[in-house]
Amino acid sequence: NSQPWKFNVSDESIQVFSDQSRWLSVADPDKREIYISLGAALENLIISAEHFGYNCTISYLPGETDLVAEIFLKEGIQDSPNPALFEAITMRHTNRNPYQMRAISGAELDDLYRYSSLPDVAVFLSQDPDTNMAFRDLVVEADGTLYSDINYRSELGRWLGQGVMGPRGAKAKLAQLAVVFLDVGPAETQKDSDLINSTPCIGFISTEENDSLSSLQAGRALERLWLAAASRGLGLHPMS
Image: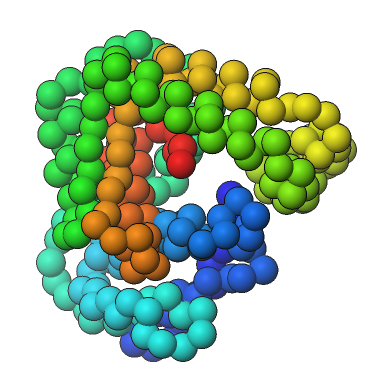
């Protein structure tokens, strides 16, 4: 939740920059996740512009340092193509509680696929218990790797201490100390495991390449999927 973006607004375009001071260099050494975050912010901007009657032309990675996209706006008269997605922007949040074990209907799945569809990005939604178990095992292994790294815990603790990831004030400082100096890995791993065990559906977002542009596009698809879920009262929690 470092919110690593800056915007430059002019009469005809909006530029989206990455804020390198908000890059988590230990957790995200190849900057894949910072570009996914920027893609999600970019998608909110595009949905909002279209809602207010603008056509958008996007130039990705134009070349200027830290400039990830420039959106050129032109007034149009078309109706908003996705009013439900726009309304969900202020509703969307991360679900950190166990899920209800209710299967997602075929109609809901069709809507999620339809709204999250973007060129060059594949979205897969699975309600297969074996797939959930395999994914859970990967998350448990990843958690073990991360929480055994003091540099990762120190970076996470620094952000917790700033109050940007849940606790505020004195509770934020206590959370920072706990992550850095106590062995919180097993408890956090158990939380993730319980969360996955309770979910009826796992979603995967895939791109053919693993470059910055692909991560931007994956972030756009993630946000569209998340907004579509929120508009239907479905909770979502990102894991990577």
